[in-house]
Length: 149
Ligand SMILES: C[S@@+](CC[C@H](N)C(=O)[O-])C[C@H]1O[C@@H](n2cnc3c(N)ncnc32)[C@H](O)[C@@H]1O
Image 1 (cartoon, rainbow, N blue to C red):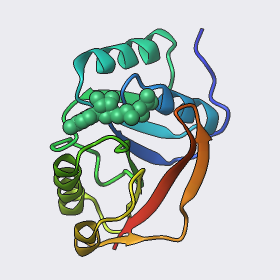
Image 2: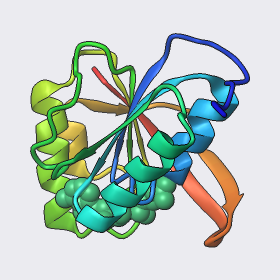
Image 3: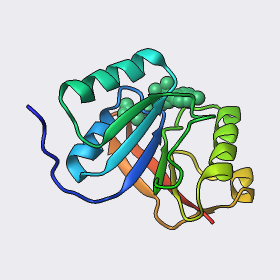
């Protein structure tokens, strides 16, 4: 039986590193937003896709792609969430460059890491919107919020 979304708002989010996809599915079902998830590891991508297909969860799409080269819907995406808590610096740097080169002005970027000087030089402004949230893997997970100027 299809699952009905709770609310409806035309907001589009890209999640870089969508893994098994539970965050995308949760956000789509709770807030009625559209999400595109990009995951590098094939079995994670397949499991996420199987779940949204099996339960007919609307608004979520998964792509088996490397976030360094992801073909994000740059024109329509308003928020990009980088699940970068454990990404190493070279990977983060390459993904920052990819976003800075392609995302449109005003795009909101959410990261689990504080801003680096390079990130700042690329035009990412740190907004006064950071969140600290208890999650299953950490008592106080930081979500830093940036905007592409
Ligand atoms: C912290 S997990 C994300 C958790 C996820 N949002 C969820 O709902 O479960 C980070 C993910 O980033 C993925 N990842 C690492 N490097 C990547 C890359 N270059 N491109 C895409 N995904 C990558 C990992 O495979 C991992 O699944």
